[in-house]
Image (cartoon, rainbow, N blue to C red):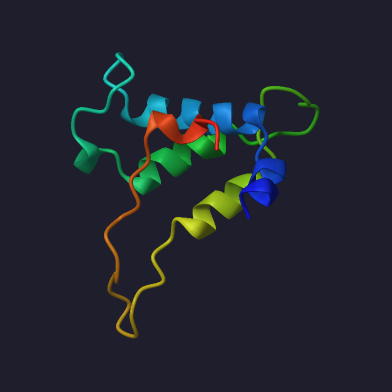
Amino acid sequence: MLAALARTFTLTSMTLVRKAVLDACDAADGMTADFRKCQRDRILNRLHAQICRPGMTADCLAASRGDMLAHVTTDPGNAAGRPIYEQWKWDGGIVSPM
């Protein structure tokens, strides 16, 4: 499973994800002081800015990878649409080797 994940998200693509997390949540020191303020939508907005546009070949993330991250971090919710789980916590360590 980890080998498949490593092929899906290269070090370069995960570095872009880390940048989106830090741009959205960092207190300019590599740390997030209050994870409650580091919300999924805020990070996904920053991640969306990293998506490749026509003509871009470097320093961008494939849209399918951004969509995948959005999907796997979405709480499925219960029948009433209320969250089942605690919000997934993002941090700059997301790029750490597996």
